[in-house]
Length: 471
Image 1 (spheres, helix red, strand yellow):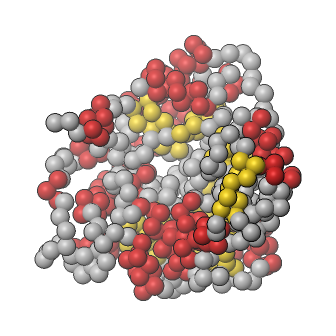
Image 2: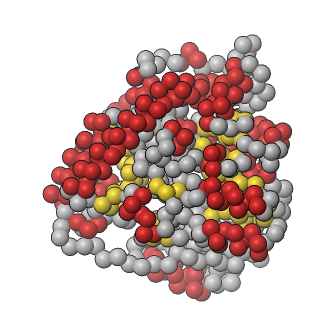
């Protein structure tokens, strides 16, 4: 049978340091779980209803809440995207303000567009193009300066495993009477070990959205949103979840969430301890061959609060090997697929689905790459400014629905942008829809282009033209 997608997927057989966390189903096979196609059903007597659970789904969600330390847990079949959007819409009315990091996930922007919510941006600290977290004094000053801010949304951990002091942020948020929402898409596993950074629920967050499929083992697109305390209107949140999720929720996705909790209750500590042992041994071996990697100790000079060691971030630029090249070599020559790369680093997602042999093969590959491709010369570092906050003229909703036209970038001074310009890394927008374009901004965009920085979000990849809002 010529199944185009299936045939291609079955032809891929690589060592996975990318999501999803179950690693091609390995963790399921370990527990004897294979044929689940007959579980694909719908709302019939006995199967319950995600949007009004009274039976097995309610029981499963209660068990998940107990495990993760929430008062209430809701299963998500439209990913953490639907969780972030619903959390925002449950917390803020149109025209109200939310304090968010400038590099928040695009689902947060989608929520602001849908809800007519006004963003107040915080600029994170940057080192070598990577966000190193928020300055807590800046955060508190923002709340003092603008009493109209109603909620705070923080991404933690970020894509590179860097963690903020959520416990302190929670104290500050609640001191000023604000709701704290944490996009913990990359941190659903943190609860499993004291050797990992503190998870957001234990740290005092009001709502936490987790991509269970990324760092644990549920199926792609399945997530959870956890609620704790009395600051969140549960009925309103349930309404928003019904609005932002499919009316035909997949029982395969919900079952994978339930199975994940079952495995964690039974073997979670053993599985995470084994992963951490494998990682610690892997990092020691990298030390011996002088390959740089992220760790709490190595990041401490940059005022990073904490670091998730399950996020493998490796830098071989001192051997003349940039991150994008390293990712390509691993893929093409060593059959190893990482999660992503940037100019300087490769990033891998290690989970309880990985086995010792995965780490040994990655180590041997990196050792060989250093020997074969490494050079004595060091790649010259360029210091580029990402800390630009243009004047906001329109909120995200107004900009999204505004009529747009394309004009030359050099002629756009004074116009309102109709699209994003995002250098990646660090993924912090230089320009968002609804913001005013200045001469300094255009000059900086040209500088980034001349330095071969990847700029995303803009329709014209040549950067000759930009979409603006018609006046």
